[in-house]
Image 1 (cartoon, rainbow, N blue to C red):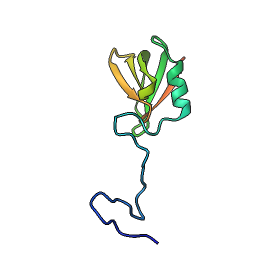
Image 2 (cartoon, rainbow, N blue to C red):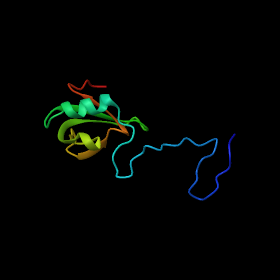
Image 3 (cartoon, rainbow, N blue to C red):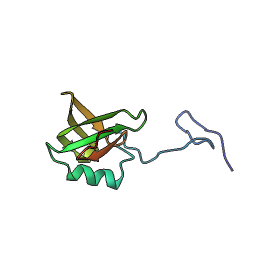
Amino acid sequence: MLSAPTSPTDKSTSDEKLNLGAPTDGTPDQMSWDDLGLLLRLSPGELIEATDDSTGQRWQGTVDVVAPKQGRLWMYTDLGERKLFDADMHTISQGPVQPS
C-alpha cells in the first residue's frame, strides 16, 4: 500500500526513484568499478578521449591530473584547453585515440 508524503521532507511517492545512497559531498554516486579501475590506471601524459554522455560531444587529449576517489580527471585537449571531466557524466577511453 502506498501512502502520500506526510511532511515536506518525506518524498516517498509511487512515481519517484529514490537514490538514498547519494553522497552530499560532491563525490560521484554512479561511478562503476570499470570507471574507477580506468582512473586508477591513468597517469599524466597518457592519451585519452572523453565523451559527454548527454550530448555526445568528444574531446581528445592527454591526462593532466587524476582524482580517482572523486571520479574526476583534468585533461589538456588537443586544442590546448584544460578541462575537468567527471566519470558520472563522461565516458573516458584510454588511447591511442582513433580519429572519427
